[in-house]
Image (cartoon, rainbow, N blue to C red; front, side):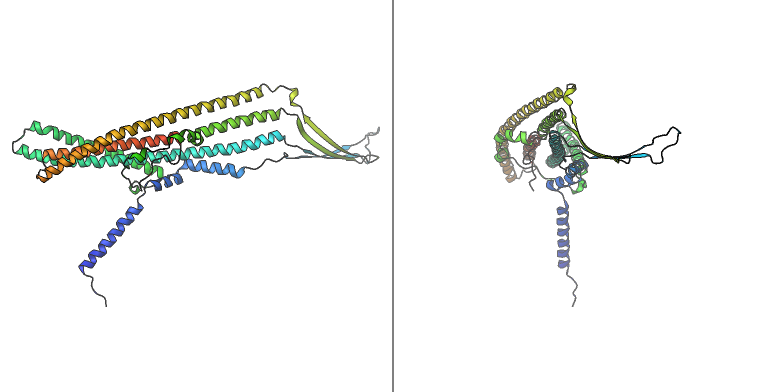
Length: 429
């Protein structure tokens, strides 16, 4: 028998549905890994690079040993004219058929196969380059938005404390215990904080909208997180291996090395073009119905003799082109080595700065917390001194947040220089 639900049952059901709705909303929020997946899937430039690479791979095939053959078929008629200007009853007819075969130069064939492989590798570098730029932009916008959002929350907390302080000052002003001139600086500080809050909100919203457009999602679906705290483990990075790994992972160096190979193949093609080789092979058959009914078969070989003419300096240009690309590649390698050395120094400098500031911030925060605790025990939690101490603690958090933001920016710079998959700052999810 059905019973009317009690008010407690209704409350529990409502709470259950509310919790499920909140959980569903939270699940629909997209963190950093999901945003990266969306960006890689929806970016048009990356999709074009992928399609171009697939097209080259699909069209690739081993070059044959022969070019397309050529068939020739001919017919001729020979009519002798008598003195009476009357032609013979049966004119002479000739029929010809021949086929030409064009064997491919083995050196040219080998070089063209190499060139085909290099072009595919170059397109793969373009794909990796495009993918790297998309990833860097996603991480940059995401951590920028997270950093601004975290700063915004801390400054809101400072603003709330200043509002409490202003209320106390207003009470003292109303009671005539302080003058307007004494309360004015605090009021101006609160106005400045309001302006800063508006600016930070606009900056965060802009970063979130840019990130949403890049990933093809709604801004409201993006889940921002607090930048992770720094520790000694944050600076325990494989500095020694970076110099060995960077030349292998950098797409610009990969492209430069492939350009050297491409120039070498171009030189091989020039050498192949100057090689004595068969232009074509021809076999033919000819038959005539003239008296005697003759027929004739033939085999011809045509050779190219390119050494009899000048190459107009083509070989020298090809050699110098290889040398130029090699020199350019070496300069790029040296530049990468210097960039890696500078990056390591910057990380070590930030590590030292973090060690000093973290210890100082911890010590000051501990003193402030102790002072606030004593004031709260004395019932002076809303006094100006207590509020100033609370504001100071939040400002210490802002300094710590700034260090974390500097670290995130340095990790992004490291990815630009090293282009290693494990360098990009990861989500804490």
